[in-house]
Length: 137
Image (cartoon, rainbow, N blue to C red; front, side, top):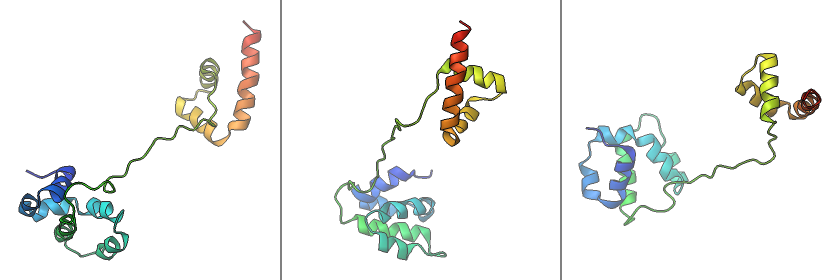
């Protein structure tokens, strides 16, 4: 049974004996991403190991030797990203947007593209449409 990426990296930093028992073919499956993880801290070394024809299982073994210097999973190994909520993006009134999409036979994705690529004109158009809709109430 194949070992998963995060199980392999955990063994790499915490249990070196079991890491050495993992088959080369299982290590080779994750060589690319492990090289990317180590490139965060060791970019020049990772670049030198990033050669076509290099045995990927042995590449992971090399990084395993580097990992022996750590007693636990280092904080730099995994990168965290934050989802940035952009407050500058204009969101139209849902009723006006639904009417606009029905009138032009468009879907939600088309509306999002229109907002993304032409927000100023669309905003003006929606403002006029909203005024017309309010007049009819």
